[in-house]
Image (cartoon, rainbow, N blue to C red; front, side):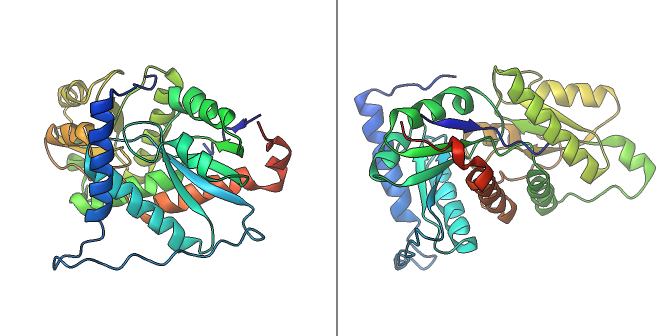
Length: 299
């Protein structure tokens, strides 16, 4: 039996046909190989595996990514996991995807054998994947697991969003007139689950507290308002100096689309920002804490 652990501080899976599945597998393998090529065109040596120390870390960390047809997403997630390993040497860190990329979560869990694992979704809010897909896959495996909640909302995400905006050219308005014209649209993927929208709205409030200007949640698909609608509404209120904060874990179609709609600056996705890596470990630690141990059971 697999237990769920929401751990909050503040569309069903699509089955690919065989051709699409093969193409995505090839893209995944190619992205992995490209990540080993340096700027001079020479192949980087693969890093030696970090020895596992089961006595210190009895639970492996399995980061659960959504998956994407965009090869940049897999490269980004792979690099993020390297950041996690650097922060926690000796911790066994594995990757599993919900769809579209290899390895799939079910295959990752099958390869763990009799290890215990903490599953940490690389997802920013509650929704179908958090509530159904990931716990369902975990329950069907033989691995003893515990599933952490979504990454967001959390102050570390607001920290990463602020940093990405600063990289894109954000500066806190220095006078009242500029401040009254300034706002930020927090561009997220979108979900039909109302809890997902609640989580995005809470992240928007955390970011607004850092920036000192209004931050409006908006969505690339499914939920409303859309990013263009949010920009139009802000302009009608005199907010014409508007940045778009990319609330995506990695580059992809939706992140690119939202950035192109920005009337001023647009930040990069969260990607490999150190705060994201720290948050993955925070969720792992919370789920692996002794108080959580009784809920860890085998299927």
